[in-house]
Length: 315
Image 1: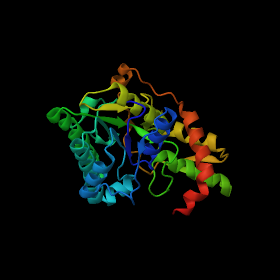
Image 2: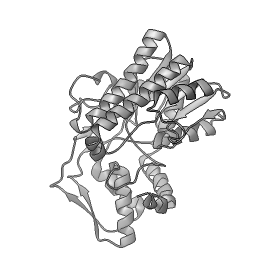
Image 3: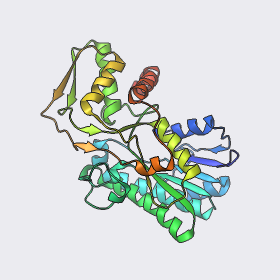
Image 4: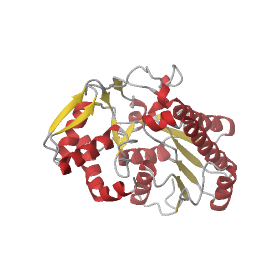
């Protein structure tokens, strides 16, 4: 990408989009296009077409999506499917009709089958049933990457897709009812420390293994792919390393400075025993994650402390 190219970052206020903006600015890109949800509703085809016709971006990074935890995914099933299908279809098609040179679409590791062989390789897509609780979201994400793949095949455009593993970092969602395991635990430990609680309870046995990628590493990988990858087939983005939920909880406990006890409620479900992505395709291209897990947790916690009152105020 030329440093003067006009780049549209869709979803620039979210966890991924805000990290992409930081990375672009750090690398000297200045011709950046953004729009808030109030300014542009990506589910409305006419609005998206008018936006692209007006701004004529050279490149697009599509990180906008309707997202949530297990509860939200399972409750708003139709909404998650419709909104994400519309966002992807409108942005990808408008990019095509307005001659965008390159587009990158963000997927999610939930696209893989529920009982996927570990580590999960790109070839495992569509080889088995999805996890039922987030099936609508997963189907929408699969549709987005297939849209990119098939526009590339039919029209000869350069539209690529990246499939990140579990993400965390600055601008994460810390809502206790609707956030993922890492930010939820960080907030639980922080509030337990403030309130002087004797213990914090974690669901399950602590034995399931999970992979976590610091979001600024993802942003670095996305810009690397924009520069170095031109194939229609999607690419996994992760660390290639996994840790147990117990190790995750112990690391967060240490970083937060909570001195009470850690209790595992073994009557609660563990979920999938293991969820690790095969990142050999990306590593063969020459990219690897740089941020060590504890370092990423420390950076996230520093941001969380600074923004804690604002986070609580939004609820």
